[in-house]
Amino acid sequence: MSEGNYIELWVNALLKNIQTMAEMEGNPGQTVAQPTIFVSRGLAVIIGITGARSGRIILDINMETARQLSEVFNGETGLEEDNIIDSMAEFANIVSGHGITQVNNLQTNLALMLTPPSVFRGNKINITSPKINAEVVEIDTPAGSVKISVGFEGGS
Image (cartoon, rainbow, N blue to C red; front, top):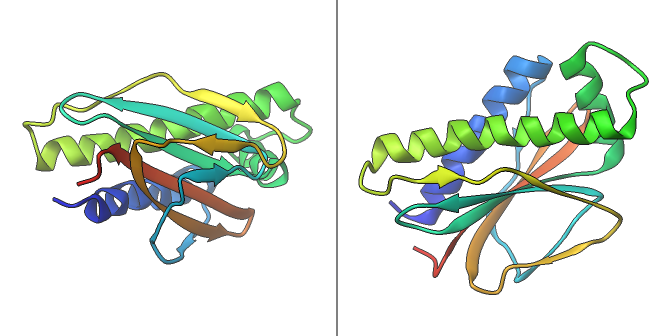
């Protein structure tokens, strides 16, 4: 299985969870190779991948979109920034868990696992993963766009 297929599994997990948790449809764009430097829009949740292959997942979103999605997820308005960050970290964890389960079901010899999420907040933060070959997809939703990047050390 190539990395392109891996990202498709995570994109499908993201679309399914946006639909299930927020009752919104997502429209994925093209899968593109990610440059070495990933520039965040404001809130980046990074989850590591361990096992037979090392890698990472980045879920990136601007704060307004994060606020809108978090309010729908929690059924409340006026959430504090800490609640928004926690909601997005948990959302990324759920999406990543569904994606990794699909990969492990297709390739049982990989025995991939996830690390706890790390959250980075700030405008135009550069995230550099020099040993990671990654692909990224932007998904448009009624709340705004969400980027997902999936990459593995050394590529396919």
